[in-house]
Length: 254
Image (cartoon, rainbow, N blue to C red; front, side, top):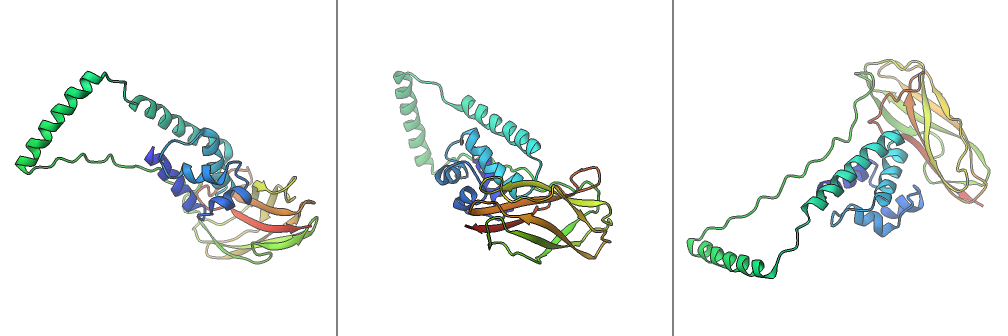
């Protein structure tokens, strides 16, 4: 259970360590702030609904991983922890046996004190799953350079149209040809911000930078809007599953 909570904590860190309040109000987690916080403390296994909301907004929303794959992987892990906890639950014992065991423990403790020897139980090691997935093409890599337009937190009117531009650098050894940024997730009131489903990425040789722009229409309701994109090839395959998603976040004023 501690290892599972540590994985949730590690996921939160890899997604930029947003506050639990932001996970709920801005990223769209359908769970209370206290439930999200408790999930990563490891005192008890969170419900699957809370676990999924924790994972969904970070792994899918922020990091841009494939929703079905993320759900299947985390559901299997959650069920394994749940079943393991059920097997480790101690069976009820009769009072008479408890008295005998307590007396025996007292004798052993006394012997240990006289001998000056203490035997401590070594905690079981906590293992975590690697958070970074390899690129689809060996040698492929990217680096985020800057938000060229519309910095995160920019206030836009309801229904406004604007162009969001990012700058990236090809830090790998593979030329970027026939690539695109595919919309993976979006959060906000109503239907959220409207964008194309796919945005072309200009050809970019290794070591060069490129700017990618997307046309956006803000929702008609005030609040916020956040949309995430991941790089794909011409067949729609995710090229850099371990890389953070490109995203924008704006506040929408009525």
